[in-house]
Length: 479
Image (cartoon, rainbow, N blue to C red; front, side, top):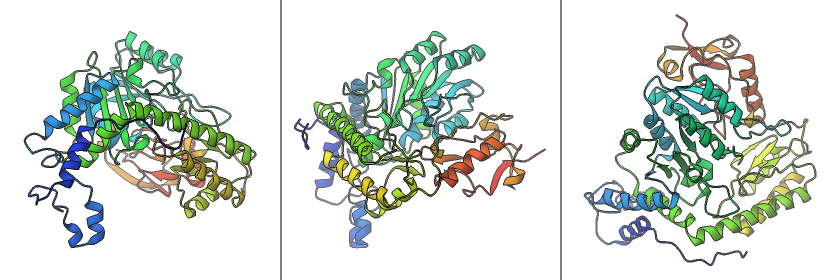
């Protein structure tokens, strides 16, 4: 395939509405307050605000804007085979929380894959749902998460027959997939709805080289981040559902409960265009170019840098570079890449993860390979290799409290040496990928602390903790 695509552009009504507003003469007397004139006050502020158009009074008149948005969402619902669709300007965080609010009532049990993102956990807290954690399998040689085993789901359903929903993360951050169709079939046979966080798989389902999107294999609801793997504004996300097992009105109320009343029309227009693009012949062509570019990069890096492991992923667009068995330092390579203008999505001492999307031309991916190869020559490892600490999954600790109970309980801060055996009041996760190692309500164990300190030592950012140095922890006050 060539460097540039040849298929025509799709129709994207919200993008057209954005362009009409941006090009229109006159003076707006609606929000936003910058009025596209802030550059006269502060030039760089004007540059930041230049693309900002509101939904209400921007993409359409204040009275008609919701109708314009609903029409665009209906087209996306048709393209994904859904009964209900909403765009979000709050990212998949908002979308995951909306689904948590839609599937049950306070006190209901739900089955949740332990690689769920922080946003899902906070959705459970908002909704008062009690999680039953399911631990995905891990590749023992590589230390990377695999899928959730059907046998583990069956055991959980047997032990928790009143569970209302199953929350899955498909694909994982490293592009691995469970047998989603088999998990959905089993859950449905027990009357359990299936909600899939497909944040990293917005591009699935529109090219034969890629996995099917989750609704196509029977899931009841699906969330994807248009801004992660599609060319959309940051915070642009989509939530879709089928109404057989989920109630439309509850879905709508769950979505509205945490949605802004002043959505950014620019984000919505970019989501609309990105969805139209990926579902069009042009999207199919771009996905083919992307798969070829990543496959070429994988082969080239393996040939140029002995000792690397680049696992084949269920997602052909995912490029995972494991350094544990090589003589190269991931953190040193990252520093060289940043200096050269190639920042990565994720890097620790033993792993590199660039995000490659349909917006990257083959020459862009080739330039990244050049930079990695050059950086590796300047990046000798100082210690022995190991598995990536970003994905360490300690055994599940006891959970004396539910996440919601822990969220509202009184808490105190204690030194790390006094934290073992106490109940955590906070969520702590290496980020990326943002998968919790410690959840509010769980007991802090030696194993938990070891996993967190290993990640931090390897150069992984420790997110959401009150003290990212891990010298202190917030714990539930003893009564």
